[in-house]
Each structure stands twice: as C-alpha cells, then as structure tokens.
Image (cartoon, rainbow, N blue to C red; front, side, top):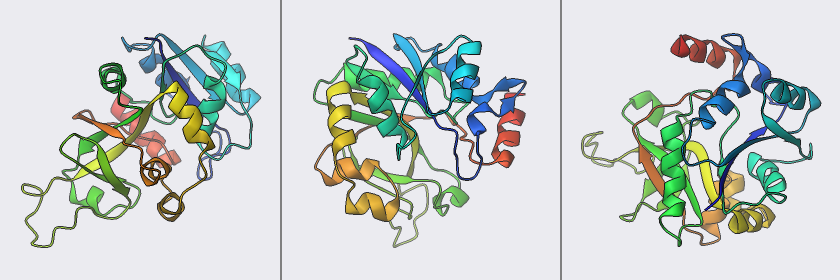
Amino acid sequence: MRVIGIIPARWASTRFPGKVLAKIKGKPMIEHVWTRCRLSRRLNEVLIACDDRRILQAAEAFGAQAVMTDTGHNSGTDRIAEAAAKLKADIIINIQGDEPLVHPGTIDDLAAALINDPSVVMATVIKAITLPEELVNPNVVKVVVDQQQNALYFSRSVIPFDRDQKGFRNVPYFKHLGIYGYRKDFLTRFSRMPKSRLEEAERLEQLRALEAGVKIRTVLTDVETAGVDTPEDLARVEKLLR
C-alpha cells in the first residue's frame, strides 16, 4: 500500500506571513517538518504543496520534492487534494507545514490506522488534555470519541461538559492535533463537498465530514507537538529544539 505525506504550505498566513520560511536554528521551519517526515517508516514519499515560488525555491534548495498549487485554496485539505490528484497513492497523510516538532512515530501510527482497517477512510490524532488552560483555550480544539475511537464531535468549546465538576481524573478530555490521514479516493470526494453549517460555525473543516455522516477514526498519542502561529510561537519552538 503506497502512503504519501503531503505538507501544505501557503505564504499568506494571517498572523504570520511567510512563516513556513521563518528560520529555526538557521533552517526554514518547513525544512524541519520535511526532515521529520522523512524519518517516518510508513511514508513512501514526502511532497510539499505550496502556493508561492519563494517556498518552492526554498524547498528545492534543501532537496525536497515540491509542487505549485492554486493560490485560491481555502484550506490545506484543498491544497493537498490538488497535489494528490496527480499522484499514485492509496493513502495521503496531511502534515501541517507549521508543526516543526511533528513526531515520525505519530505519522506512522496514523498511517497504520488506515492500513490496518479498510473501513477507515479518514483518521486523525488526539492527545489527552491535562492542563486547565488548554481546556478553556478556543485555539485548542477539543474532541469526544466513541468506544471504537471514532470522533463524535470536535469543538473549540469545552466538551464534554463536567456538570458535577469531577475534574480531569474522572472526565476524559482530549485535544485534536492537526494531522490527518485519508484514503486518496475519499480525499477527492471530501474536497468537493460543500462547506457544512457546523464547519462554518466552529471554523473546523473536519466537521464537514462528520455532518455528512463520515466516521473519523482517532489515534491516541502521548507525544506533544507545538504549532507555530505567531513569532512568539517560533521562539518557543526554537527553545524546545535547543
């Protein structure tokens, strides 16, 4: 089964334009992402899908395979769907270009969820929440799952609601890590689905799949990651790497 990792990379980030080329320890952030992806045992190939020639040239300079995609895409999923359309692949793994600490083992576990269960068409990664500040932070997306580890719902709000205030020891809280796996044929269908009402309300594109009745398998990890949305995040990640 052929598994390809695609890293979507756009220039015009609202809070941090050009962040994928911001330097961490002297290297562009996206090079750190690409390097970690290449340590995965499950990925047969790693591709950068970008929308700006500056990113393309930087990627080629450090030896990555990269392709230009439409500048008008609203999401990373749409960008990787365009890139994947021309590839021979069974499974596509979407790795965010602003996650320089992504762990190769997490990528492998996500790919395995699709490889080992033919019924799974979409999967993603979750991690237990242990910090109260993460629970109330709307930028940390929460998720509840069923007994088969399929996602029931994703929200920026606190879910589930702890009515009796039993706390972390008795209530399972999980956060969503923004890495996805898709069967290639489903990725094509998903990118063509119209945006859903829940997706628009929460600004979470995975809700488009749930609202359409698609099951999303979750993979539990204990490995922390750190996304970069601002220059302050960049400094924090560089400190962690050092």
